[in-house]
Length: 386
Image (tube, rainbow, N blue to C red; front, side):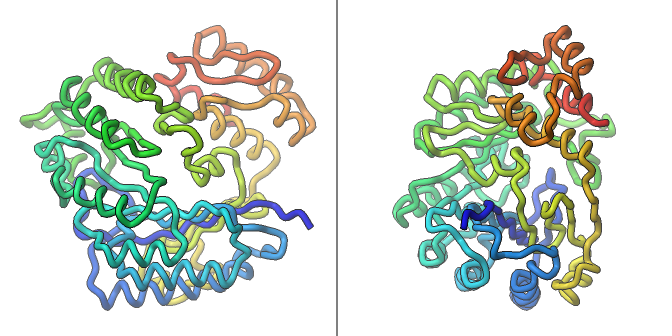
């Protein structure tokens, strides 16, 4: 029997200290709280089939992603337990990609040994910058030397599929300083590099510091400067052999994040943990962001904070605005096969206008963003919302 593929996302909402720019659902915690949370998470993982209303016999788990927060603040035994429950409860493929996010200053040899024992085969390390003053500005808990120590530990533990996160458009960031980070990371030869532009989000210290126009020592880059930093990142990584396969993601051969690609291709996934989202049976769910409510009844569908039954129009829209950030764009053949209608028939006027404005390009195979389209990505994506 050929089964469909499915992913699992597990959210660990704890950090050693929350960064000033972060608006993710996360907090500091003691061992008592993290222990209670892991118990609740395990209970939810056991019950996902009933909670989401699907048959696990119909699916193979192709990817697992443990994100946060900072999952590496948990004990290694906690991660062993979480992944063990997933393996015992679901049909996890032998070659499944299993990723965990870690931060320097929270990882030990023992924890990495536990990750290996659990079958985790991909590590994502949050660096953000190779410049210590920028790390301090971002309120990271580590300096660059700590990152190097962490990276060495990961390599010695036998992990050869590693992502490094960096950030661009930081306050006061020059091209020279960004180049230092890029070339330093390239010199380490990770298989994957994610380069995200800093976003100033509400309800963060960075929002209070920068969004209200108050004077400060380091100004945020303007729109033109941010664009230059983006192209500098793309070109520098491209020259070093990293293929840009999505706006913010670059990989050496065969080192794409299969889990992230599954999001953009709308492959079903289960979400477990506080504020975690899922897509099952064309229904999008999101768990509560109230940690007490979550821990009281993690297995109950009543803790869904959001539940959206997707119409066929919704699914077509998602196919377009989730697919376009990928360099390959959206396949006309796949669209027709899935929905029984041509994307040009469905979105002809939108596609024609965006092409005229130089934001997308296309042919009989499909459509994809131009360089200019990447600059105005949010506008392009919004045009495919019915």
